[in-house]
Image (tube, rainbow, N blue to C red; front, side, top):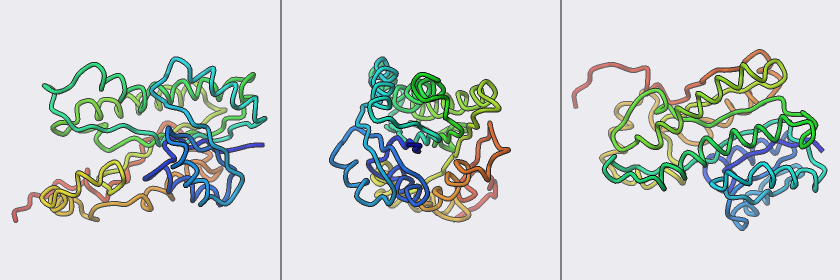
Length: 247
């Protein structure tokens, strides 16, 4: 059975993506919390499986995913890496633990999953398309985002290099959302001052997961068959507007 693997499917954008993709594909949902994954599964339409796994455990991803796929007699046609860890903190507060956890979740796990999915032994080399959920901050900068921003830049670097290495068999692209309200960011937007600044500086306002879903669906599909190695920015115009404004 062919499936689409969605990491970070237990909440937020990952959940919205999974529910929408389930209209057209069988799914594998990944996350750490089985109960929340089951909640996502209940809203999915096609055949849906749960691969419960903590992506910070990079060293054992290859073994665990290979055994899981073979045990279920499943192959993965498309992979959407939506899992993400974001903690805002100034550089003086950063330690090695948070760097490792962030890069493991956001970058290293994606690389190891793709290694499995391009394997003839583990996945019959059935992988055709990959979409990374990156961030518009990967090409820019913001205070207190050094760990998160550099991890997303690393993810986009991985995308560009693998899109060359794995062509023409596998297409790999990144979607770079801007500021949007999700489970991961809702605490940030609870600050009215921050929310007002985002709305003021974004021509199309603050986004929501539904704004990202159609772009990912297109990139996963055969309709995007001649697109690879690209960063698709979906941020309501935030990164293109250099208009000087005064309140």
